[in-house]
Amino acid sequence: GAKLQGARTELSPYDLTVLEDTPCTAICEVPLRAGSRQLAYLVKLVLRQYRVHLTLDSLPVLVKNPALNYAARGFPVGFTTPPANGMGPPDMHVYNHLAFTISCLKDSEEEALQYRTQIKKPLNMTAL
Image 1 (cartoon, helix red, strand yellow):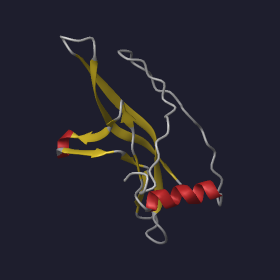
Image 2 (cartoon, helix red, strand yellow; image 1 turned 180 degrees about the vertical axis):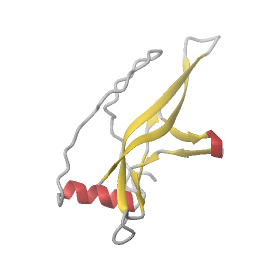
Image 3 (cartoon, helix red, strand yellow; image 1 turned 90 degrees about the vertical axis):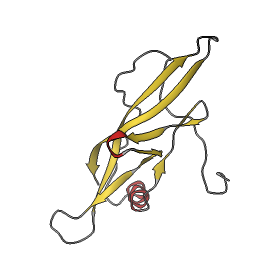
């Protein structure tokens, strides 16, 4: 079903080691020019409320908000806000940082580790 919906699995550029904290790491930097195809595509993704889905060991990574008792698969590419001057198209914002936690539970009977992953929240919005 996922392939029929246009979903495709790709390896992420994150380099993680089990039981080791990883500091904030830049995985890519892409300059966007006004009027470029890349910028137009990114705007389209935000307007359509596109979500990025991550998996770890074939399990979905969740975005959790304990205050609202909320969990969802994936995170939005960005969001819109009303224009600052009150007129015209909405202002566009892109989530360009992620902070996530991978919890490991070691099975007492086996050497296997069980994972629970959550994205604390997408961070650092940048206006388009």
